[in-house]
Image (cartoon, rainbow, N blue to C red):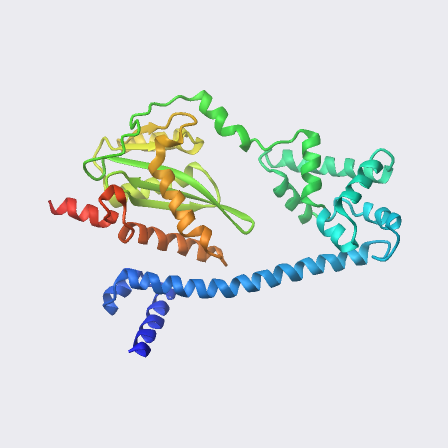
Length: 368
């Protein structure tokens, strides 16, 4: 019996990995979708455990490689007198992470940083390097429309074979007064445009496709940020459409809205509630809503509770799924999000639905 169960599990997972939908597998194999989701989770957990070990070993190897690189570059040995080590390490300041540099040379970090502070006014080589870096940072910042912070500016410098640490870039950007325009853009935009809050936190709706809510969240994986837009029907709390992009743009929210309208075909007068994000406020998106006879409602500034249902969904997505997984590829990230939304709609119980899933709650409504 156990052998048979194990065989079914492997067969179901193989079909899933080959791209077949969970519902199709469940129907063909006469197994509940919840059982298949459970098998998939077990499979992912086992695979992620191995992947975690590999990742940790890779990080350790990269760290040791950097330490070897420092030892080859520095002008003295680890056993040299402290004064000699500090002088040699000074030449590498800003090229490597301070923690790593001090650990490699067996020097207290506070001692090294105090030495650097004392040297700043005297060391012409050090000051010249800082000035050269400032020019490069300012140039990259302006060339990229003032949108990049220290992390991305560091990445661009390294692409140009400039060996520099993010700590140094952050310090120099602060001295130059360079701050990404993204930091305050939303606040400034909100001041310019005031929109009506039609919903007014009335989250109980008596039928599907009367009120939809939407928001965008961001999730960092690897070197990229992934923006997820979701649209939720307030009646059943069902995710009626979602889309993922590396850009938080008007195109992201418009594509999501197109999918929702195509699949649900709402009647004219649908209320669509969002925050005051620039993508939702763009003229292109507003015109699209008008063309489809959708009424746009906006949250009040600095009042996240006005869009609590969308906020709650993204909180569940991250806490119940994304933060618990070790993701190994972009494709896997997309697949995890798709699986969770399918589970959220068809299986996950919701207190607002009297502990029924969104799909079940809508089915009951249409039967009546």
